[in-house]
Image (tube, rainbow, N blue to C red; front, top):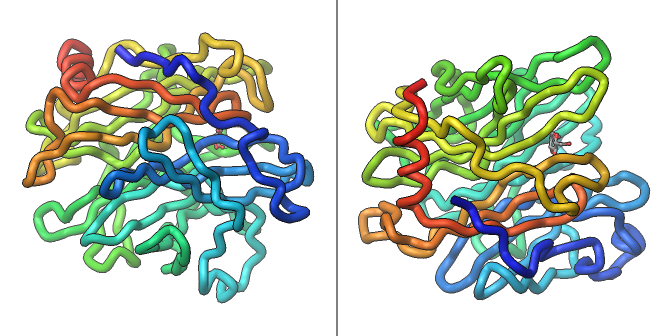
Length: 324
Ligand code: BMA
């Protein structure tokens, strides 16, 4: 259902301009967020340098394939007000909401991993709006409009998998807010399937409105004891009026590590979707069924890949899958 672009990987460490000491001879670029605005695709790139420091960069493109990378690291104005040390800001997800571009990021801090929110109008200056999760959480994505008078987001509460190991989670939750700043957990919407490809789960790009429901790509992880986890991509449909109701999800993954650049790298066997560009929407904000869809994903925590499909194919994949 998903076709890899023949020019994959479309962004590698060689694509990053050595514009300052922090960006000289970087190690990796991966897990981008994406959005289409007018005729331009914007990506926010997660760049890792040889100090294992994380830097976010902006890139833009007309076709979603060939990108120009801006040389200046992104700075979230106001983030200096956070009293705690922030180690990494990463895995941005971009949602256009009320005509502005909102960015949810994961923030590794002394107290754990939190979700942070920033906003931009031009991908040049960015305002930090605050930390929007009380507890450990990752993979937060905002819905592109209010539903029943509330802002919604899908997120993934974290728990330690094994003592001393990084935290992860096996449930995607919905949270709601009336001001985008204070969020209340609503409940789980999609659970991991023990023993199968998606034991652990996390939202991918922000949900897309379709006639069949909210289309949510997610990553599923098959964990392996003392070995590397396999990160794959799946899709789910949530009810339009009550997104806490899961309508259907794909039975199989729809993208899994198969190419060398997905299987070999900093973290082997990872495809991690963060951006989903829908090229054709109608005037009410619904994605058209025959619209081309470009999915930008991180591969092996090292490079960026592009896979393409249509809205109709993704919906069919959910409908012919399972109900829960
Ligand atoms: C997850 C996140 C992602 C990363 C993936 C594979 O837990 O940290 O950013 O791509 O692991 O390492």
